[in-house]
Length: 166
Ligand code: ADP
Image (cartoon, rainbow, N blue to C red):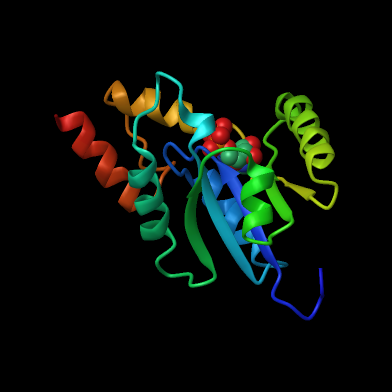
């Protein structure tokens, strides 16, 4: 990568929905990235317990980062490395909450690198108060009528409330 060019990083995940933990990681990235693409993976989300469509997740990411022009939302299907190659962004950011995340993330990093040797993965820790937070927990608590306002931003909260009001 030519260092004179803008440094574009990719933060990939299912983001179903985007939590304050994800937001924390994304905003921290701007300390060293010129632009960050928050990319919603189609592949990782074909599980039964998905809540929002990929388009809704992208829309929420756009709303949550409306104040930050350097962060944009995207979606991709297929391999993350192919998406990164296509947009010429060889650095992927991942959040590490606990040691339990480590083994899977480490395996993925090495697999991704074997698929595309130029790829680098950067691991970041969120603020301590978000280390227990996951999108699946937010989905569960919201589905049971619990208050998740401390864990997600306003645009996500609004959509969660609309869902549970149905
Ligand atoms: P989740 O595990 O919450 O369903 P994703 O699959 O969308 O989230 O994860 C995308 C990336 O964000 C992964 O690298 C994951 O480790 C990271 N991440 C998820 N929640 C948090 C959090 N609370 N703090 C830091 N990183 C997180």
